[in-house]
Amino acid sequence: MYGKGLKPLSIATVAMLALSLSLVFFYAPLDADQGFIQKIFYIHVPLAIVALIGFIAGGVFAILHLRSDDRKWDAYSYVAIHISVIFGVAVLITGAIWAKASWGHWWVWDEPTLVSFLIVFLLYATYYPFRYAIEDRDRQARYASVFAVTAGAFVPLNFMAVRMAESLVHPRTFATAEGGMPGEMMLTVLCMLVAIGLLWTTLVKFELTAKSASGQVKRLRRALDAPVSGGSSRIAPEVG
Amino acid sequence: MFLPLAAPALPLDEAGKYVAGAYVVFVVLLVVYLAIMAAKLQRIERELREVAALAEERKKTQVAPGRGAEEAAPHV
Image 1 (tube, rainbow over the protein chains, first blue to last red):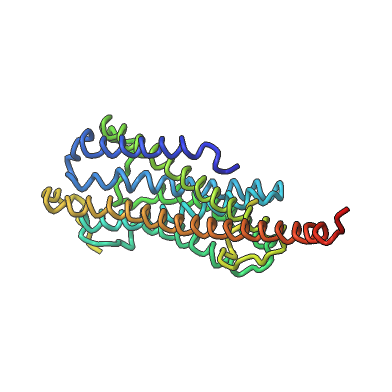
Image 2: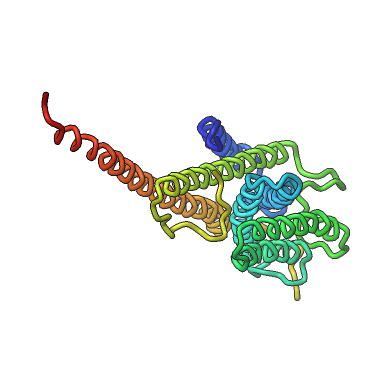
């Protein structure tokens, strides 16, 4: 029953996204230094935070899979990482657009925040070929869970290492020194963070529901001794 | 690499293109994802229709021999 509560969650996500985008363009004041270009941060920063939390959630689900040996948790871990990778693509592209507008370069290799996020993203990009390389479904699920736990532990370590780095060119959104951001901006960022978090949850539930429906059809085919069609992915975990 | 740390704010007409670009990227990614999911759901629906047709076919073939035997039996 992965689809339970999907409808109200989808409605809440659309409503929260609409409200947050209205706040971004009609309520939040223009930044004194960056001007209108700072509006990119309202989408870029929540996407980055939710993607990183999603990677950690993938690790937590993987721990539950390893502890219980329940394939459901492997599916949760796979889908959490899958949606976070998609969000990661959006983070890298929106960040590059901001960098081009603000710094005049699409990418800066000596900026720790950018490079560290790229490392995390590339690490998770290897998750798919890693799963694909293992034929046996049980071994695939177990090894993928070990990968998700290790990579999930790397995410906060990486985040702390970047925070401790001295050369910081990348702006800090939740700055603690010198007052931080004004209240209207903070409220807008927090609303956008909730909206993107809801979007992530909705997409995870949506993907799990689709996988569950696909799994049920396969079970029906097996019960009827009918050939199982080869259209589905060999790396995606099957959920009943 | 030289980085302009305190770059002046871009004028609105120039900054607008970048801001629109960033939000369009987000929307495009979302729409592409939803299109892929729609294709997946269509495949599941097609498979489900095939399975339903197969189940009905099996049911008919299971019922048919019984009916045939009934027809062949002499009427008393």
